[in-house]
Length: 412
Image (cartoon, rainbow, N blue to C red; front, side, top):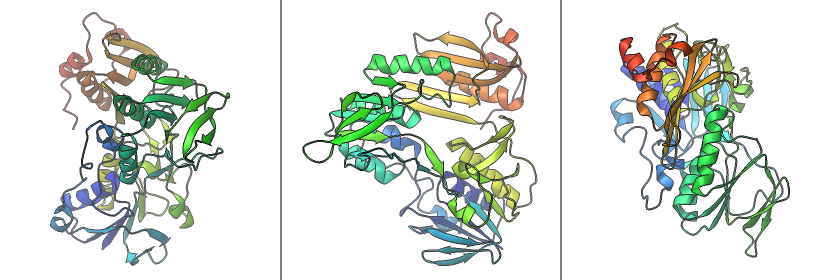
């Protein structure tokens, strides 16, 4: 028996780790395109870019992990093709045979295709190499333009402000972080970033870049013709799933590798997890693809247990976080644009939560600097306790008290 995992990120390593924890004793191979130990990616757009920060992000597992667990890490190796008949993965260092194959290939940055998009000084942010380049660039940058007001863009905006840069964010959509958050929360963050000094331009995308006298990027021209000085540009316009290898192997793909509720593809020997997987969500009641550490870890665990014979569906509650300057944004559940909203706490003090109700029942919670609300929301939503808006409007109601009264097990 053998398991091959394509991808050395959070999802892939969690799957390998759980296989060993659950008693799997046969061969495990992990194919990782980047050289070196796999590392934590979330700090790349947060702590790692802070002024005075030195060193590199922490590894996902320590140096002895692979030896102790008898897991073979093929670092700096690319998977080139999958033969599902022979159950073989062709790599840049040879062939690996499998009984079960796990795609944990993650996602790649979307690229700009406007004029000037290849000028020096224009960066993406996905890998440690990207972050190292930005870490150095921020030491001398004066005028920073960020394309995209998603989580990565606004996290980087906060870091650039802390370095004393002039920061402009161009967002083609009318709201920042609009795909993920309620209108209440996006409005609050828009006002907050502006108050801190970010020139946040909504409904205004990038038209083209023009070089400066040194041949590097010098000016960003927006879709409505406004020019913005730019000696450093960061592009954060979302990602695309790395599903080409799976498609070439004859597996179904549609905004990711299509899997069932157990995370298996139509080929029962092949699974897909993490950012590259399109799965039926019990919480969204629809098929979706999630880009989060929580989802990667939980799906890694679930896939490992499925390989070992478990047949239960994947139903873990989605939750997320983003650190933007002094503000810790945490989300539990999946909000929808038509949810009924209730605000608890003090927005002016930057300590509040937005409760999202669907058909009168709590369905999601967004919190700013309220970790106790977030933890309680995860407990309540995971347990399906059915908190109603009427209950939440009762004088003295708090999520923390509601969770403790219902004697819900602690969420790991």
